[in-house]
Length: 271
Ligand code: 13P
Image (cartoon, rainbow, N blue to C red; front, side, top):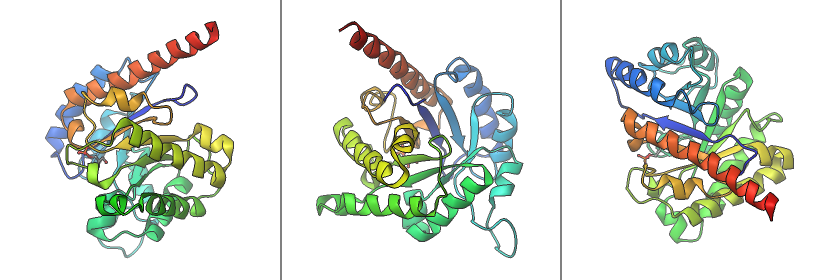
């Protein structure tokens, strides 16, 4: 992680937790991470049913509540959908957009993902835009074609975003929920390429300040090596975020990566 960007550790609960379980989790997590939020942005992406609970419980803390999806209209005859104003109304500050499960299972396209990201940004929610390739695409040498297309589609629809108004997450689909993490080098290579493309599309200042997370089978035992990579600014965590204890451990790993960064910077000054 580079020193100019504040790392983010984000829990994606996916379709898990009843309201009571969300309450227990937040009650456990908040005191555990309270001392870390100056150095690390901590976010919990909850299902819509428990989002109001998480929104309320995080209200007086620096921990961010987030939704896992949104629709790109504000209101109207869209049965089953939830809009940006509704998400903000229950205390959320961010929203995951274009998660591979939405793209693969629910048929979201680059176009709908781009419209959702644009709507989130316009509404003042931080879109956490997910991109990533399947195993077949990677094996066939098509990783960058897929990922760059996903990034371009979203950036085309955003109106001069600032680096702190949007977050990207590189989540190789073959690493999600499989226990097979991308190697730290593969994560760095992909995320470095994404940052390069963001420089072309959004300018150098944007590319230097925007955070790009890695997601896919992150756990406390492998997070430090991933976080140590220059371009990796944090993690979007599924399975290992479901227990408050292991997610708090991941926040601690991110905090330590900040300290490590400062040590490295000092060493460079001395040299
Ligand atoms: P896992 O951490 O369970 O692999 O899930 C990653 C993910 O999809 C986060 O959005």
